[in-house]
Image 1 (cartoon, rainbow, N blue to C red):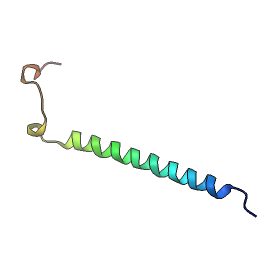
Image 2: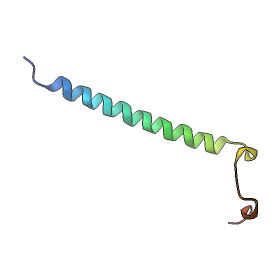
Image 3: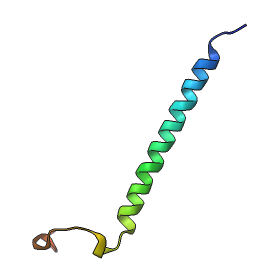
Image 4: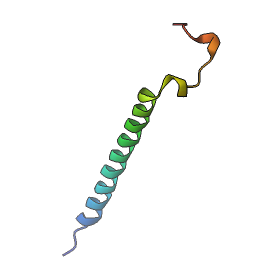
Amino acid sequence: MYTGNMIDELIAAVERAEARARVEQETSELERLYLANPSELIFEEKLVGVA
């Protein structure tokens, strides 16, 4: 007999997949930023060297 567990399991699987996709997207964005050549970065020349 159907107990409703299947829908709960599907919802949980979708939530896990969404969380995994979000982490992968954030990771790829950080990798892109950290691995970018300095010439590819846009910056304010008057602020270069200011810390």
